[in-house]
Length: 389
Image 1 (spheres, rainbow, N blue to C red):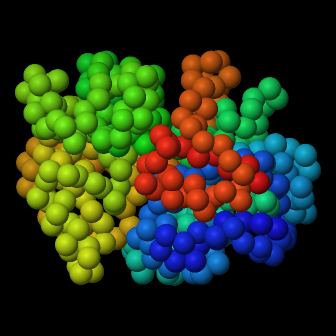
Image 2 (cartoon, rainbow, N blue to C red):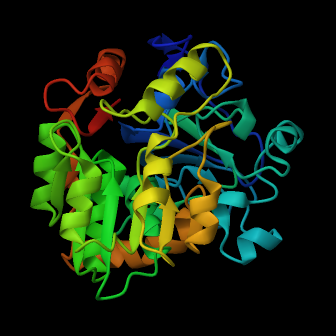
């Protein structure tokens, strides 16, 4: 079969790889009908996530038709149409029973490696390094889904791929980021990053009743999409983020702040961003934390910082004094996808939101390598790419 494979920094190739096979009774094999390039795939593309190996199949946002099921899988049958969450969940361990699906205790088959990195392993993830299990990803013609009896979202009749594809990652990721802010009707929610996850953070904050939503970015097409979703926008290339936030919150700062950027933060007028790039270049720091520092500084005392943006290693110069003395709450983590999907599917069916709004490019899987570059360089108005095998 054909798949997109990682071969090194900025090197994604359209390769021929072996077809997947059933390896366990709870498995399923799906034929991919749609998949997508996610913002967090850029951290692989730029080689900021360790333990990638040449030839690894990438991609963690995908859906399709069930072609084969293992003997122990009683939840799926051939012909079922499913979205596959990027977090692989057994559904039986203590964390899964609590709804903490992204830290499933059984699905990361390289648990010992992740334990050394993080102290305790999280769940296995599709197409996202051997640190998270080394599972083949979904930017492919076919995918083996482990624990498929639990790691799936069935698609109701009448909904298109484009309406439901993002239930596998960016829609529940944006929703969880907003939900863990505990948004109140009087709140201002500030969101750094107007990429795909940031766009869903905006719409989730609006649906959850925020009084004011502000989005910070510097890409015109993304800012326009953010405005269409109900956000006031700040272009950090032409405006002072600190001054505008002070103005919009009458000097008090936003109650809730969301980092939808993560480890590759860009800033054009800040000394800490220059500092990060220098330390990163000499291997003294792995992640650029400009957004995280800025959120700590501007957030209203007793506020909440929500971090869906991916961090992979070490950051420097975090203002812990401000974080502690202002009494800020920090909530973060990979997304507990299945915790949210029933509610979000209902909202799609009821017409509260059509997630397809975020798609700007739809191309064949064979065009994936060039679309990685287009997305990475923010060319051609690119916000979200859907690939069709």
